[in-house]
Image (tube, rainbow, N blue to C red; front, top):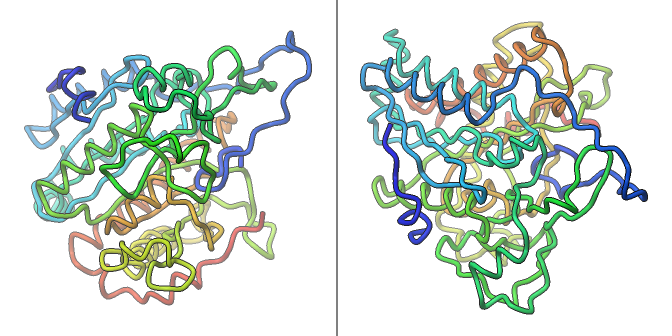
Length: 395
């Protein structure tokens, strides 16, 4: 496992769980002495366990998996990348940008292990055609606290960016207290609002505090790390073909039914720059690829539908018509990546091992459907109109 120096990295440098929508918070408690009751996280992966698991995966992969420290969280925890494959089609996948959205991390580790160790024709083809870069547990400080935001104060931002002295804190800066989280004593940011389509953007005071329909600022070390991984892949390969972000949402049903949603998909996070609605993104029009994003989502949906009449069948389309350039998905879509959002049902509720296993399997199935279709080129033959036939989520 290669460890990249922290100093060098830093100098070089989505409703409650509804990942891509504006972050909702539970109503603040009025009593300062109110008891905090953290949701259970038994059965999920801690940062220490992640380190051990990645070390073992790399050691037993016969050289197929390379693990590196890509950066560090604000509290100094490692943010890892695990790379498998040597192909010229690049897929970047991350999990747990929100620290209480944990199933994706387990699924991502399982997939990296399988692709790296399994010598079936399918897995060999993935390794030959794709370069897959996984960032499991992208927000390790939030994960350790089992909460959405990272752990970072506005004062720490000012220390890093003195030009922001006197600017208002960002709109996504959490300082509230409720029955689950105490951000008053340990403030933090929704890292998934800290991205900017201009990958070279430097924070400017006039851009604060911002809002959900405006770009972010790259003020957190977590978003900076992912930005730098993305830019390095661009420099090496020319483009990052696919970006997949693994999230959680609340518990919903398929529109017009009582069928509980297993997970929701989406490929649209900003208005198309070639339309009047997307005029403010006009500079990105030549690289934005809405059709490819839709085809990637159809590939995931089809793979899950092939599981038959099972818990994997209740797949819905996440709310459309979003304008969220400050999300990782919005930022990377404008930079030319085909994008896929996975919104897994529930947060850190204790579903039991059987249910958690089903959800993990659902994520693996959908992501592998995408990877296989990209590796074979079949993704480009999928009917774009099938995207709009995916049933909507009833919220």
